[in-house]
Every structure is written in structure tokens, then in C-alpha cells.
Amino acid sequence: MLSMSAVRDGGIGYYLSSPEYSVSGQALVGLSTEQVGALAEGELRARWSGSLVEELGLDRGSNVTRDDLDRVLSWKNPVNGEDLPTRSRRGSLKNCGFDLTFSAPKSVSVLLHIGGPDISGAIREAHDRSVESAMQMVEQWGATVRRSSGGVASEQPSKGILSCTFVHGLSRSMDPHLHSHVVVMNLSSGMDGMWSAVDSRTLGWFCKAAGSYYQAQLRHSLTKEIGLDWRAPVNGISDVKGVNRSVVSEFSERSRDIDEKLVKYFGIDPEAIYLPSSKSARKLASVID
Picture (cartoon, one colour):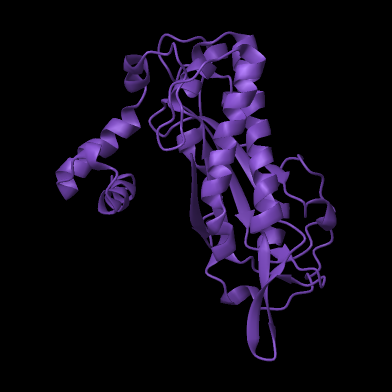
């Protein structure tokens, strides 16, 4: 699954300081520190990603510091603090970035936490590789900028994207939920060498394809590496055969909470999620306290 949402100015701080993802080894009762902490040690540690990392003098895969991030968000070079050559004013933008969230099937997330070190390690590596592959697709086809000539705006290719990736192993409800937030900065370099906002429309168009590609790559890797077999896909997502659905349901507290709010606030049957109105209501229900 891949979702995309805008990150408003000031919203990036959530990813760096949110206590919801501060995970202790005792977050899930009955599981060892090693099992729960398959990702806990890396929680809240963001790493730079995207083709434009090196162009700004950063190292791909290096840890994101608050100073570097603040400079990038201000459209400054993170190394020397100088203003980037731009074609527009940073102050006119409402969004500082876009959150592309890649989520593994729930059964895979459960295996991450209850499997041994070999299983957990293989799942984490497969997830990371699959996210990276999907983002390469996004960069190749969905990373564009807009340029105007003679009063006519057109979509133009860019040199890529600049993003920071946060990997989390648990949901807000502390259920197993392996997912990566790839926060794409609303900043890209055109082929003319000038920096500007990304074309979010093109980025959004390729999200569905990238999400399907991620799921396919994840299944392929885990089948090859640890021999997993899969149930028939539902909306492009397959769960692991052998992981009982009752186990998956037991570790889906946030999903149950959203279902309850669908009924309480919208009078919608959670099973009717194929309806467009229900999908919108489900998204609203996910943010209701």
C-alpha cells in the first residue's frame, strides 16, 4: 500500500519529534526486546534519499540533522547555507513536502516481530529494497517541474527528488506495522539548473503504480529469500499464507478503531470500503480522536 499526503509548513517537525513512535522494548507484552525492537532502534532516525542528495553535498543514506533539514526547507544549500538558484519564491508555497508512505501487509509486519533474527532481518532488508526500487520508478517518471515560456506553463523533466526516509515498525496503537515515510521535499532541480517546487500532480499520478510495484517487489524478495507463499491479492495487497487471519486481526487495533468511528460518526459499514464516499470517510475517521 502507498498513500500520499501533503506536509504543510511546520509539519515536518512531527516526523522528527513525534512521541507516538518512541518505542520501548516492552511495547508489546509477551514479546522479547529483540522481537519488538526489530525496528525500534531505528525509529525516528531519518536518512537522506533521492538523486539530488549528492548535488547538495550530502551523502545518500546519511542521517538527517535538524540544521540540514531547516536549510533545505528554506531552499538553501545545507552545506554552506547559501540560497539555491530558484525560479520562484519559497514563501509562496503552502506545502514543504509530500509524504509517500509505503506499508507492508499486516501479516508481514507480524512476522517481522515474532520471527527470529534471520526472518526479521530478511523482511527489513526486503522492505527497504522494495521502497528504494519503487522510489526509483517515481523519480524516473513522476519527478517533474513546471516551467513557463511566453506565458505558457508546461511540465518539464527534473534531475530527480530530494527526500528523507523514516522507517517505523509499529503503528500509533503499537501494533506491528512495518512502513516507511518517504518525505519528498517540495524542491527539485530542473534540467536548466534552476530549483523550484515539484509538480505534485505528476507525483500523485505515479503513486498507485509505485505502490503496486512495491508490493510486487516485496513478495518477490520474500519468496526468494525465505520461501514465503502468498494468498490471492486483494486490491493489489497479498497476505502471507500460514499467518492466521485471527492473528492479523488481533494485531490490528488501529484498524478496528477506525472501523468503529466509521459506524459512530458516518453510519458507514466498514465492509463497504469499495464505495468512494466510504474511502473518504475512512480517511477522516483515521484522524478523529
